[in-house]
Amino acid sequence: MSISKSDSYAAAGVDVTAGYEAVSRIKPLVESTNIPGVIGGLGGFGGLFAPDMTGMKEPVLVSGTDGVGTKLKIAFLMDKHNTVGIDCVAMCVNDIVCAGASPMFFLDYVACGKNYPQRIEQIVSGIAEGCRQAGCALIGGETAEMPGFYPVDEYDLAGFSVGVVDKEKILDGSTIIPGDALIGLASNGVHSNGFSLVRKVLDVENADLKTVIPELGCSLGEELLKPTRIYVRAVKALLSSGLKVKGISHITGGGLYENVPRMLPDNIVASIDTAKIPVPPIFTLIQEKGNIPERDMYNTFNMGIGLVMAVAKEDCGAVMDTLIRAGERPYLIGKCIEGEKGVELW
Image (cartoon, rainbow, N blue to C red; front, side, top):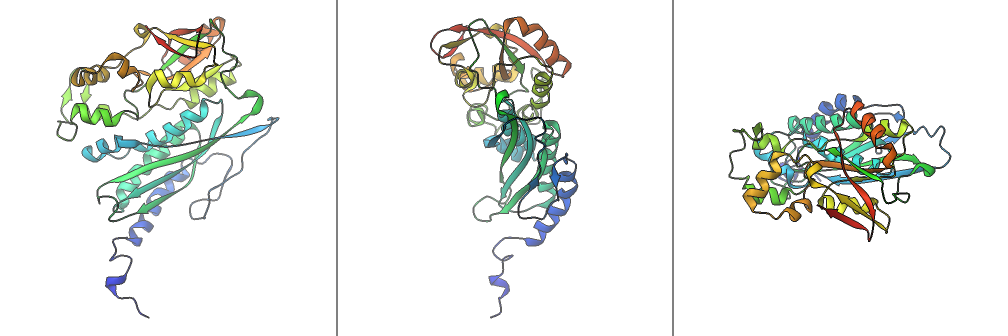
């Protein structure tokens, strides 16, 4: 039986030819992330990776998956799509490194209303950049054209990463004791959490996103699209230095209040001095525009700290020096005290 044009896949809104073009465009981007262990290239049914477990007594795989959330709405409004891929990678690999694991590979999933090959190339360029920053390989992914499900000018973006750590070196916070120091690493602004609140408070759909705001030093759109910082290389440099890290927390949705306790044992309170946190101007703007209580700000946003780690008090100086050499901006933001697990901000 012949298939009429009206019954074809193209007539249903799926452009197979555009899919082929997108693959052709992203192939060199994918190859730019290749590291030892990558087997083959694009085109297979599964991404292949042969990990080097040399020297590990009991290798443990650590996985993470996440998306970019409604931050994508800012990318649509700005028609700028080459940074959200960094966010997607960051949200996965920063979680993995909290266990002391090294991310090995990453896979992405892009779902769109219409496949525009140039836009897919821009999105994947950000993903590839994120992978290069994290030192992991982009070994596969999926671009799904879903007409009638997504608007033609919109897409969703998610990803998945796997890392490895020797079981005896897993960071689980179990050795944290009262007196340990809490070191925070600077964020790059809002990162990828709290954007539903940001969009409502700042009315971004109707706001001027392209005029420079002096207190921000850039436009609102540029500020909100600053990509999530990737902390993998700095943490790996610290761990390889021989200095002991007792616990790490990635400050994502839920802010300091919800994320720091995830690395604490039951008898420890994280006592944090907010005066030691370098709060970026964007958070002051959000708080003032929305008349948001300070506790809610610290329970929603990272407030300038993207990663918190617990280390022994006597190691604090050496840890901070190592992080600075690795390109980070570390801050001594508090200490661990005895009490019911939680966070105390003052």
